[in-house]
Image (tube, rainbow, N blue to C red; front, side, top):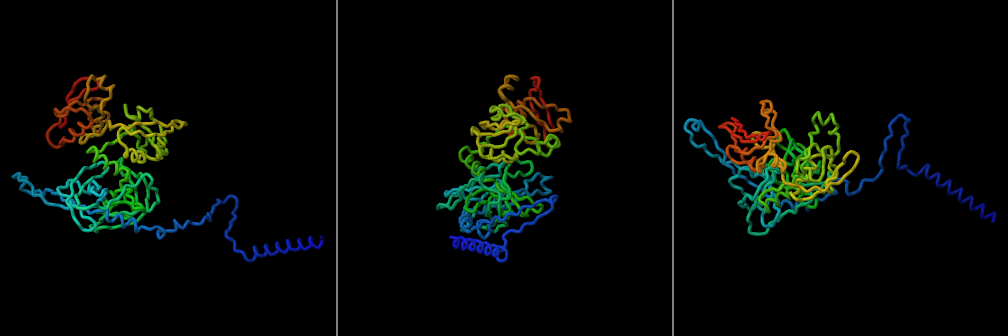
Length: 466
């Protein structure tokens, strides 16, 4: 027994010496630790291995998506006629000579029977449209409908066979950093494919309420109306805009999300125009002194600055000061997140709006309604449809209420806010769409415009603009 115990102890001691020697002299350390004084910052180093899927561009296969996409992207040629005035027009009033001009862009086939989505600015003012497929066959195209607000247009060709087309992807599921391909016809170079990543989502440009996908895939003049696809070949955007000082690609470009484009196309086909659902709130500009002083510019979400009367938000109980954090499953960090998602909805659709009110989180089901207010062209007045309260107060059934006026009119002493517009140059105004049409006819250079209205006291007035 003593002999066995002695041998066991020798074995354990020998193993310990061997293991210690291996660790000390042979094994290479996998981690290096740096110790610093307590007042120095501590930096952590991750030793997590990079996954093979993210090892680089070589790990992503673009070939299948590119092969499927190039045959569904077309070359769009737009023939317009512009007038070339001469000195004789001034003296003799002769009709100006018309000069044909050709503009080019791209389009995406979205159905086998020849429906093609493109940008409104690609086909604007066209007198003739031609579409060339990737196999060099050309067809005359007709305009089905357009929406200048989203810069989306739908055209159609009649081909003698079923055409290759792209399926709409879900742009809400697109992730920042995801690989994408831009396919189009830049500088008349047909079937050009460029690769990049999604640089940002819900990007707003200037004062527009439109929401864009930003990408660093190279997009140049001629790419407008072309496809932005993911690596599966799903259509996630329509390439639309470039922001640069030269007008050419400088590192990023913008696409209309596919969910917005799909909704516009469906509305055009079903209704003949775009049905836009409105939430009924407005948010202050986050770059104003008011927003900075009140900390609104630092809020993650959309601060409700005003709730429109009898809107869906008003009916649901949203209030000024609420902070919208989420709509359905979409997180809201900025105003473009909100407008981008609402642009995919129609009047009558219900959305679940999550708001933060003081320290409480609340969820409101909101039924979207048609637009109730707009800024009319030429004069820039903000007008809205009459509420039931307005109709009872003024004892009228039709007209539009002025809710905002430009500062230039205010400085001239015109206190029109709160008045009801009844007629413009003798034409009755029933709603904001009538107002938009009639104000759009005003020529500020010639003649005069007579607006018949009821002032805040219910007195009938005529205001003449020259």
